[in-house]
Image 1 (cartoon, each protein chain N blue to C red):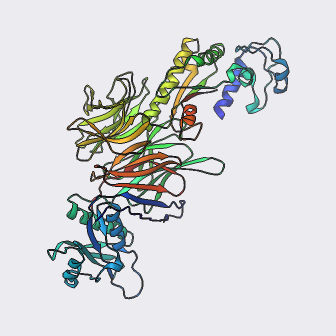
Image 2: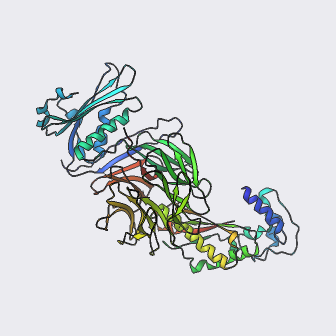
Image 3: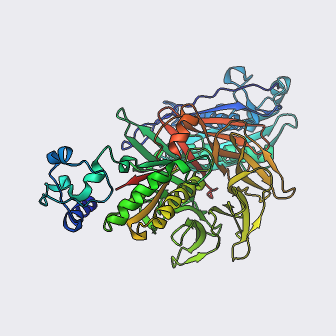
Length: 434
Length: 172
């Protein structure tokens, strides 16, 4: 397969009556050179009359195409439309060079719930690779389709897919008089089902998911100064956890969810603190007249990386989570900030400034060197997908901020934009168990 | 708004000198010094937010106190020599008006990391604050808040905008 630029436009509208509809468009503008061919046959639907509530095969096909690693077959090119293993005429598919096939059935139960059956088939071996029968409900059907995409991805790529995850981001719109409105929004990783978590006239930044996916920490200027809040994603209940004089910002949850690292300047200049979430006790981690900010936890919870300009300009430092002397990590270039560890701990993504460009780069913890990933000029706020394959980030252009995503090796690139207004500060949510 | 109202009341009560009604100001005020001592006049209290009191110097568009913004170079929190006089004039005003409070709002341009820019904005405001306290302003008269890159003065994405966004604003 030659490399193609795929344009995939997904228009979506909010399901909640209370929020404005935001249309999100995801465009894959760069994929791998040899994507894996796969055909997702439209699933059968158990009701004789009427359309199925969602087109499962299209959700799966769009997920895999958007990942940049697969090339999917259009329905019109399919030699047949089987719905289970026994119906597959293997030779017809082999003749077309199609390596992988997904067939399935969507069934409605007597109680009005659903069961989704699918099989992933290796065409050349003529064998099933995997198959499941998944119970689901009206509300969960789209998520079930994403879970099937995750399984397919895992079987063919070797790493769990991140299609059944969610992202949180900040939007900014201005009305005709120039009055600004900020929101914190959550959506599925493909941009569907956006829901507004918070609306404000004052700036919002630094959303951070709790490791169990149930809470969100963020910074809000609603009380005229920066303050850190924690919000329950299900109920919307909020708690303000840091509102001292000076800066209160950069919240980061420990991997076990018991502590929150943050930046406070109440004692004179920005320093890193760790708050025990149960007692709300603070422990100060840094003690230096320079700016120390943007703490982030290593995946094993033993280290904190952070940005400090104690050496003259911002660079990445590391300190044991139990306290100790900070050790400088980055020596390439004059500006390295906003660290975040990859889920496998091999890399730390950073904002790297060189000349007039600010780009997303990866600090390799093994080689101790930095490799620049993006080639745009004003990038910031990287966040890893929980499977470590893609990094979502903010990119700024002539029309303001928008989101984009890039694979860790740079071979895959996506753009994600709102139709109206600006988007920034993405945070990719964790895996949540089935 | 209510905090401002309280401050106006304090100024009206404590500042020595005359507080003219608004329409008298333009005729009477020739002396542009930062001190509010004037030798005549009744304490005229306007209604609510119009109780200008000893703030007439702050409201005079011809006074050096009318300059309320200081700009910075890229990635720097050094107060440039051309702004020293602005810092001085405000510091002396505060020194002579011990119950006046000013908020220094620190800002940064949009480039680079958002949280680091929040810290940079604060460092700029603190740099102005230290100069002001050295020149006689009281530590408690100067509040500092940083908005980082969140409140640009100019919305563009080029140096023309960035140079106007790297700033500290003085708000009385």
